Length: 268
Image (tube, rainbow, N blue to C red):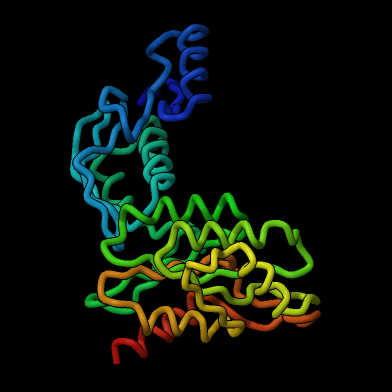
């Protein structure tokens, strides 16, 4: 099969729009496939979307046809990445049905909006993410909000021996965008954990109820056990990491493992 080379470019992005025009100008309109989550006139588009804490369902519109799809991934950026991957796969000659089957099975990147689920009847959502800066925490909370029917509970902390100025900013963001913020330790390293926690709390308005709990495992357990059905617990900061740095010692610690333990306790 002879394949025509085409660029697959995001039409929702300002730079992408410029790039589309540049490629069309230099190589012709038939050398570009555009993708969008907002503009149905794009070559690749997702429509009729239904979001939940277990993922997203909808229709996938492509130059090769329109089909239903289901993906366990959550977040706007994952939809955009999905469309780019579909476009590239179609360019490589894969069948649309094979692509949608793969989409349904793809678990995502470890620690990037990774869902933690222990049973089919799990009544809350739990998401682990690597967000550890003000921008990434804000993006995480904003991306997750549309998928959450109940409260959004954010468990997060800040690393030690790192930029102290980001700590109150992250506290303010969590207080503003989540329904309940639980401030805990991340990787304190050689700093005093209580001072790091205080730096974060300094950014949280006095009118906002937040819980400060230095023991990260206990913070995760509290969030999950105290959540109401329909709530989602977002555990931010460590993502795929399977360790915690206390002083100069690195110990085994995995947010996902702790979440599973708490979920099992919740459902037993």
